[in-house]
Amino acid sequence: MADDARLPREFAALAGQIGELHERALAEYAPLVSHILASRSRDACRIERTLDGLLDFCGNGTVLELYRRLCRHYHGIDPAAAANYVNAYRTMYGREGDPSSDGGG
Image (cartoon, rainbow, N blue to C red; front, side, top):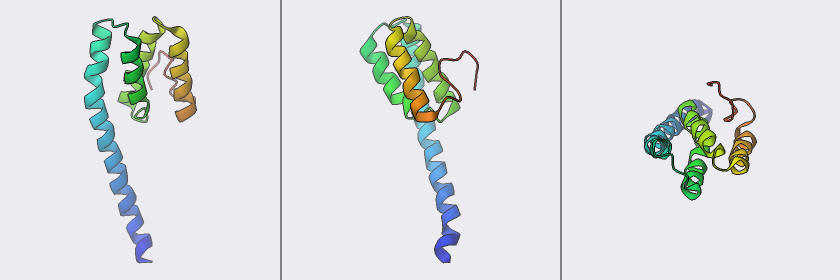
């Protein structure tokens, strides 16, 4: 019974750690995405590396927005590869919040 009482606290602690990890990812990836977009980079390897890293953190709405923006940018360079990233998101997170949509959320 004591183990059962401890579970909600452990889940809350775990949720807090996940939130901190998402915030850290945002801090690391936001400047990378900003630089890629501002410089209009066409470096597919760099863009794909960044998208690969972002995908793990798209459960965070702000990270998802970075992913969406970078997918849109990449679509102008390689539409098929960008579509693969949209499909990877759909596979991992489902269709809700589709990164190819222009709306927020």
